[in-house]
Amino acid sequence: MASVKITQAEADRLLKMLKRSLISETSFPAKGESTEFHVAGDSKQDIFAINIFRGKLNRLKYNIGARIVKNGILLLELHMNPSNVHRNPDGEKITGSHWHVYSEEYGRLWAFPAENMDSEEFVENTMLFLEKFNVIEIPAISFQMEYI
View 1 (tube, rainbow, N blue to C red):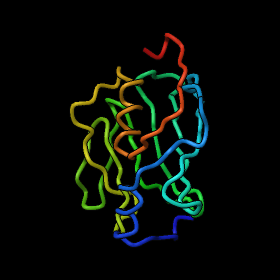
View 2: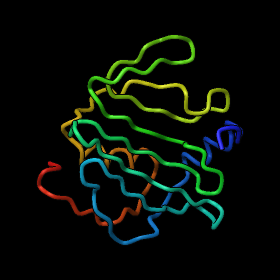
View 3: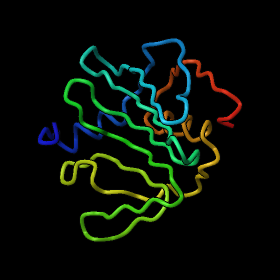
């Protein structure tokens, strides 16, 4: 679905709209696994999947993404990994944890530093991601002590 695009106005609308979880509870994934749940926006057409992945070997590596269910477009991603290097389309290197925000021109190829975020704060960063994606009703999220 990489060839599917939406306008910048539509992406901005979808990013800004308030969203509510379609489930009441979920669990953080174990190492090397992911978990996914859906949130709904203003209408039945506005359904999004939130995916949380944890690295298997490096506990400081995890990704959280939000995509549109009907077309698979990733609107927002947070890649947490202190040693990560991402190269933007203009050649600029982003070192460390970073955000991807959908743009009409670049899709999700452009990254921005995730400033003032510590990879040790897995739970807090997940909540920050949900807040940034405007999820105002989140599921109860259970986690094991190893996540803290």
